[in-house]
Length: 261
Image (cartoon, rainbow, N blue to C red; front, side, top):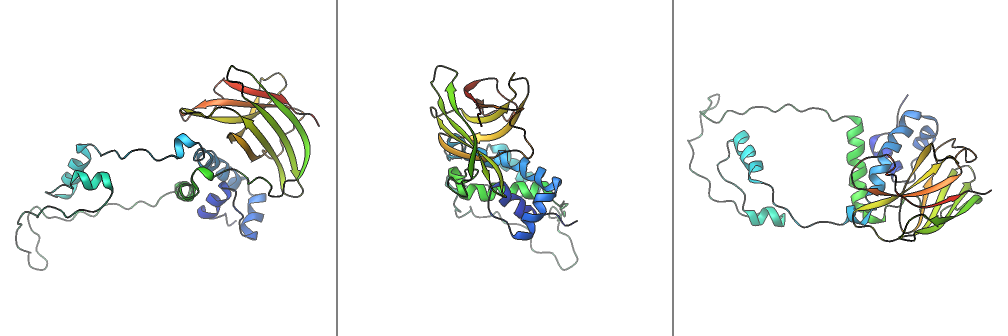
């Protein structure tokens, strides 16, 4: 079986249209769908303003260059201004070295050591491609553009606030004929400087939950997991998540509502 290429998996994680053959394969291949799902969380996180915004330039610690010099035998270092500005600067004059050795001879202290070249795994190629494309899209990387094949509303709910910040909103499940179901969340909540919002589907007793994806102020549209039973998971929950890399629910819910068909 010919799986989708890492580049196509990355585009799928960004919810871009794929060539017909790749789209058809993705519909039937659990392996490729799992790969796309694993990439989507990282891609969606790029839309969190605090993660997408560039930070100030930070010079690398001296030990970074020391390690490079030790490994390569270099005797000069880059100018600090060039490191911070990200531009090339004229290097200091190199110290005189020994004359070139005749062909076949080796000069003391100048042995060339070939470094092993490992082949990157298919997964990491996909991650790199996703982040590269996500970097171009930047904070505009929303799961599905609003208004694109909007579909028919099959369930909806108001999202009532659960904490003091007064977050609220509305959620609708839409059936896009032949293209699956999506959850559209229109969220009215404060901007977060140290975290992001995420939406979940919960059982009525809130004992089990299914992660849907990252949401933002305003409208966000996310594909629903294949086969999810809305009767078994009727609660739409919006949580406040810290930037700690932990994929589980933080336990801090800011808004919630029960879907009605």
